[in-house]
Image (cartoon, rainbow, N blue to C red):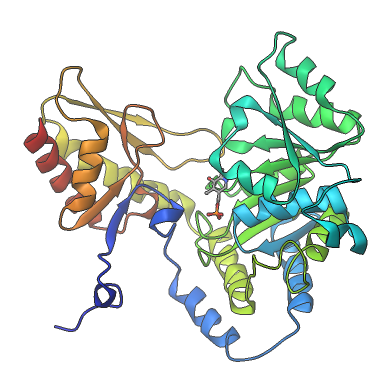
Amino acid sequence: MTLGVYEELGVIPIVNAAGTVTRYGGSLMDHDVIDVMREASQQFCLLDELQERAGIRIAEMLDVEAAYVTSSAACGLVLTAAACMAGSDPERISQLPDASGLKDEIIIQEAHRMPYDQSIRLSGAKLIQVGEGKAGPEQEMKSAINAQTAAVFYLANKMDDSSAVSFEDTIKIAHEALVPVIVDAASEAPPISTLSRFTRAGADLVIFSGGKSIRGPQSTGLVVGRTDLIAAIAANGVPFATIGRPMKVSREEIIAFIKALDLFLHRDHDADLNVWDNQLKHIETALASTEGVSLRRFTKGETYHVPLLALEFAEGTSASIEEIHDALLAGAPRIAVATHLVPGSLVVNPHSLQPGQERIVAERLKAVIEAIN
Ligand SMILES: *Cc1c(COP(=O)(O)O)cnc(C)c1O
């Protein structure tokens, strides 16, 4: 038997029931995406010309003002911050990450802090956290805006958090002070409306991962938004010697991303929802008689429609979430499930599960839970 490319290196592939998680590879590219990637890799072009034409094409596809392909959503965080601080001014661009003399404050709500926000600081920007005081979140956000404010940051998957400043109010407060709003919607979608709803509702720059829901190369990302700010992102990016230079996106990745986006926009999303629903039904049926575990279906909200299945364990059961997670990942075949989506629960996210793999997941989940409990 010949070994696969992973096994040959001693790396064991996993069954991904955790969703479009970057650590596991996010998503799988369609064969058509790989085909254009191969074709694009066999010729040269001017990378900045390609970026500009790609942006125009993507803006048409999504009906947004402008677009730019980055090397990831994390790169989108760096470049949107850089664009809001330095604009397209060559001197300012070359001084980053030293932000002295520039507007360098980016306002972020406490509830929107996330591990990736280090990427915002990588640009040289300072994060100004609001939302802990007594004044009320809206008043606090208003008071935090001053002459040094470069942007207000908003995390899209917190749309349903009623204790935080709403997306609409964030736009209103920031725009009254002529400050742009940056939205991180990296892992949102489907529905495809997520790709344009934030810019439609007034966001100045919106960030997505290219290798999560869109199924492009894992090393890509997308920023859509205002023409002047997208031009500033391009000026801060590859192929120039700028803060964005270590975050290179290659010509074949850009071409492949456009193909993936085109396929994503024309996918039968209802059929996908149906497949995911059936996969979860299979797992629910298989675990129905397993003691100590209760099953709960849920969705994350209006910007992410993929059905999710939470496994909750009765108090007093000996297994911890981590134990079960680790046992699944150490087993054969290796299976990844999510522990980060609901505190205290294991979550099966079928987004990156391949057809038929739900049987393996159900079987292994049942065996591991029964063995540990
Ligand atoms: C995944 C994720 C990122 C990082 O995305 P990459 O494309 O892997 O860099 C950033 N922000 C949020 C909210 C994410 O979910």
